[in-house]
Image 1 (cartoon, rainbow, N blue to C red):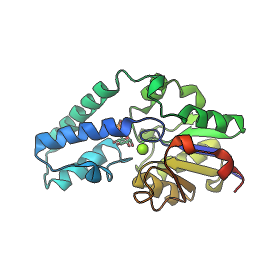
Image 2 (cartoon, rainbow, N blue to C red; image 1 turned 120 degrees about the vertical axis):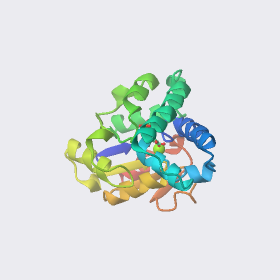
Image 3 (tube, helix red, strand yellow; image 1 turned 90 degrees about the vertical axis):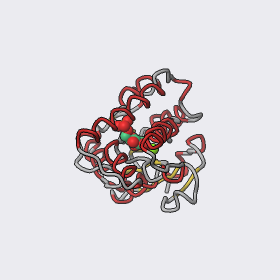
Image 4 (cartoon, rainbow, N blue to C red; image 1 turned 180 degrees about the vertical axis):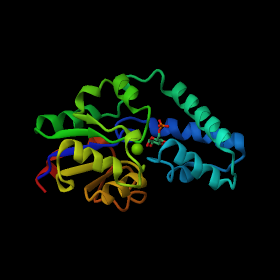
Length: 214
Ligand code: G6P
Ligand code: MG
């Protein structure tokens, strides 16, 4: 039986995956780097500087550390503009219900997002009180696809990995869940998420009882 569900945020509970993409796309366009949704798949779930490095490498560019920091903050500024008016209505249908189902079943819930903006975002979305823990991505040495953030959640909840279920929309996130030794539910396209143990189209299709009794 499982004891906790570990949720990614962007692209799982709310549609910020698209806002991240739009901001990276704008930066790529300015830099003359070819960039589309398919290229963006590799950035999903990857932290800010890691994503920027993937984008720069994709364009065959290398920049000095100062410009690298400046580019990352520009992207983040556009992203923050895009989400500044976010509220509870920007949750995906079924997101709040999934979190409540975990609570009602007596399980614990954790937020395992690579985003430094996640704490502010869950406040705005009105779901901050539905998480037992929010893992600070700055506190773990390696970002996704490394398992660190999911292992940190298990440690903080005092649970072994096999009692945890991870929910992710990104290939890097599914890889991180598996590297942590956990069961991975993918949200989205089964072809993109072929490594996941189970793929559902959206969080509205999350049925805790399908996994809880496994
Ligand atoms: C999430 C998103 C990524 C984003 C990362 C860092 O994992 O899926 O697209 O790059 O968070 O977000 P941040 O808000 O810290 O720039
Ligand atoms: Mg995500």
